[in-house]
Image 1 (tube, rainbow, N blue to C red):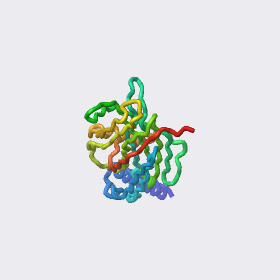
Image 2 (image 1 turned 90 degrees about the vertical axis):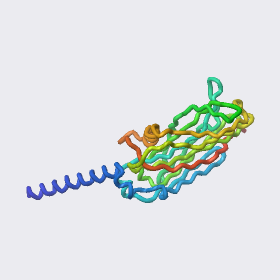
Image 3 (image 1 turned 135 degrees about the horizontal axis):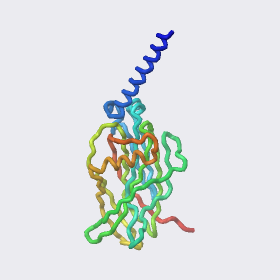
Length: 248
């Protein structure tokens, strides 16, 4: 009986070490060849007046994704505010957000945003803008999702480019400069820089990509923090018209 119990214990320990070894290998990217790749992602971005809807389906690599325990993220970046002396006027301010992951609605989703000040020129005028970055994170095992983000503007209708980034964690990958082509067009009745329009290259340098991704994949994650997010990303952009709320 003692030998039988010892054998069972030895088998359990051996199995546990094997599982931990496979998990470590997956999280460190040694199984990335069997993980999902960019062609396995179907990402659609739709613009409507005062809003943008992001939908995705990720296939492939389900076993590796389950073992690795990584975290993915959808990140939205867009021109949001114009500086007006000591205050800011919003051209595309954050409104409501709704999130569905694997057909389950996320109740009361908060919105975390990061703000970047950029002075933008169109050759004849220069204005200071605030560009917002809004991340939404979730386990890599999530196979599909939908994010609907609503905006509102001050005074006039404006147009802004929204860049949508899908990041998938595989444990492998090199950091490179990320350059996002954005644009902004301000309505003629706006109190600051009326009629201003410009193209903007929003750049995250290679040396800043680690912090960029860390803050994205851990945006709402307070347990088992991801410390070395590496993988691949897909970027899409869409132009959104944002108007003031209707008044009766």
